Image 1 (cartoon, rainbow, N blue to C red):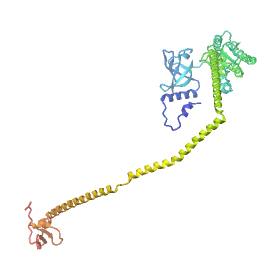
Image 2 (image 1 turned 90 degrees about the vertical axis):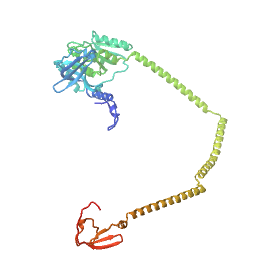
Image 3 (image 1 turned 60 degrees about the horizontal axis):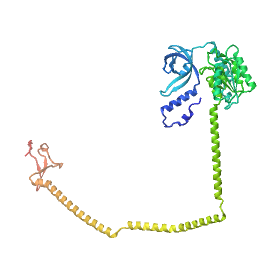
Image 4 (image 1 turned 45 degrees about the vertical axis):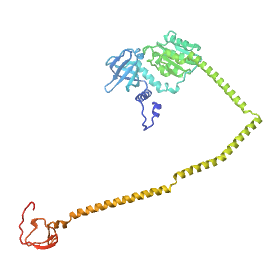
Length: 459
């Protein structure tokens, strides 16, 4: 499992980085395609639709779940039947993400009715056996030669696939010789004869890469390429083998045992043959690059030679240059000696100017102080007058509110003889009670002989 590490590493843990939805969906789709290999999935067909483009859209479901599926026209046209609503089928598909809507779907490469019988069971059993032995391990696969000196083909001379392969090789790499090793591709005992021919190719050592191919057909037609003897011969081959059997949706044991699996015989021819036009174009590019590199090297050498020539000067000219340099240094020294004095004078003038600007004027300040003193005296006098007037006003108001003035107007104050408190209500007057009467010109102690309360609203 190797998820989209470039995307994940760009976002540190706990980061507040923001990514577009399209980038996130693309990363999820890449992770799904890398994490889940091609797998057969079984279920019941529902919502089947054939688009005008030829693509198939449907869902495959069982009692607990369902999954949307798409089968593109390039693969749907080779299907042996068209599924119908309710059919139980098996699809060979890749788990992908439909990025625009963020939906999980199965990209179907092949479809078949549930259970293909004895041959398919035998295919699965042999595949599991050889896979457990490590016959299909990726580490034993060999890389194809980039520039093969000769190409071998193991197939029937009457096969249409041979003509397609030869035509493709003649178009792409007419300079590479091709050797055909004829062998039947269908019938009884064909697997052993194909295996023997692969061993012959290895014994003769005439080619650098080998194509084992035939055209498409049913599982019965392709069964020779599912036999164990051929798979072991291909795995043991010292010459790299490319398998090009059937159509793109056809898979055989030979495909898994080969170093490279091509979707078609024509695809196998394209994989093993360097395209002559591209080789010539690359040769022209390399020749032009070599010429440019040689030209640039000559230019650098000429420039270096000119630079070295300029450095070769006579002793007299060298002495003259040094004398001129010495004079320049003398002028710089004299200038450097005079510069501190100029700088000090400039600083002194600046400080003197700042001192003059900041020095106070005593006469002006004394005049200002006198004005402030006059203003203070005047303010104090006005304040004294206002306070005296306020005091006289308060004295007059106090005189008006004085209790003595009230008594002088004919009023009297009655105080309890014992407590000394003012008597305010008639109910407080009792016969025999002693009172003190305060008048304007003195006071007198009296005793009550008789009290007759009288309610009145005033005098």
